[in-house]
Length: 137
Image (cartoon, rainbow, N blue to C red; front, top):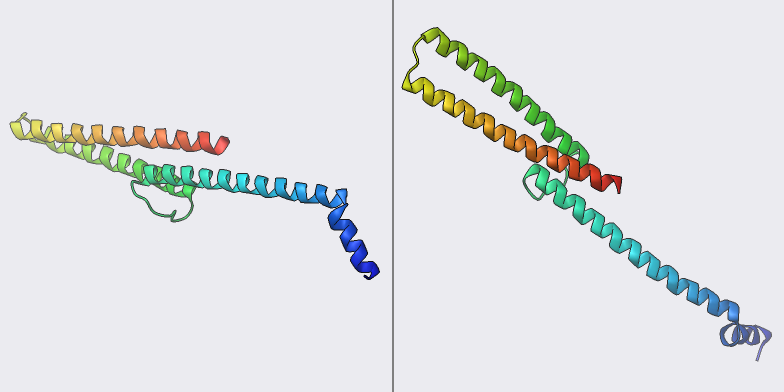
């Protein structure tokens, strides 16, 4: 038996330092697995929030936060377009003078679009707040 073999036997059989390292390695593996599970859980949560914000399950186009920002900007553009159309609508109907059934129907349609926009805006704000809360964790 060589001196090297005797040294190896001492390390594996009686070496408390080796046992301590092996024990630490076990803890490190468990910790790495816990970190992996937490990371995957966070990724799953962000993916669900992104899907809720954009209305479908896809990967982010530019990034999760950027996609939600794009959605907000599109909603703001839609609101501006809606306001402009309502002003134009009001000017046209005022120029025509009398109130007619068609005008009432058109006004109702305008109000329905406004209600839809307000609901989508509320949903966007809720989603953005959820995202901010999750990112703050």
